[in-house]
Length: 221
Figure 1 (cartoon, rainbow, N blue to C red):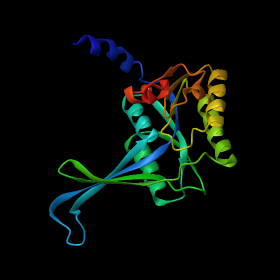
Figure 2 (spheres, helix red, strand yellow):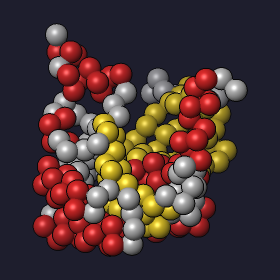
Figure 3 (spheres, rainbow, N blue to C red):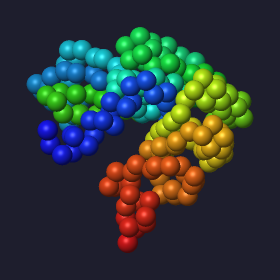
Figure 4 (cartoon, one colour):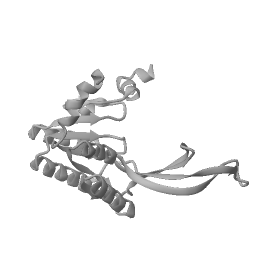
């Protein structure tokens, strides 16, 4: 077994039975597959002959799905719309991934949906349906109440899954960190944006290379 796998294996195995709360930007990822054999006579664009489509949880939903697949007991907390996409997302997470969902239906936004049109394994186009805004007072209260429930039920880890869509507004982050500290829970942040100071108090922040450059300000130099 390679050294990296030997180091990671016991960490992955330790996830079995762990209780994790995931709070963040929940999305539905749609994929529309097809073939392209001609260019449209109406405009210089490819014509996609659709052969099928499917949907999977995206954003924080994908994080929760992966944790559940590794054996963790996972509660997903986020905002969705009052629409069919929210019902589909909740069903995918609960039925297929085994994720305990606390998805708050908001009147002021649709469920975030990203649709990718594919041909030959390549993306032709992506469309986003979303509203990027912080939660209103009622939404923030509901999110934090769901987080309180997760800690009451034994969650020992909080993952803040930030995709920059507004759910993790500074006030929500600060309140979530305070609640995690009171519950003696570890906090892991998947960050977004340039200002990482809003995550102060988290135990781990896990940016990729591009996010690290932006967070440190190197990308501006």
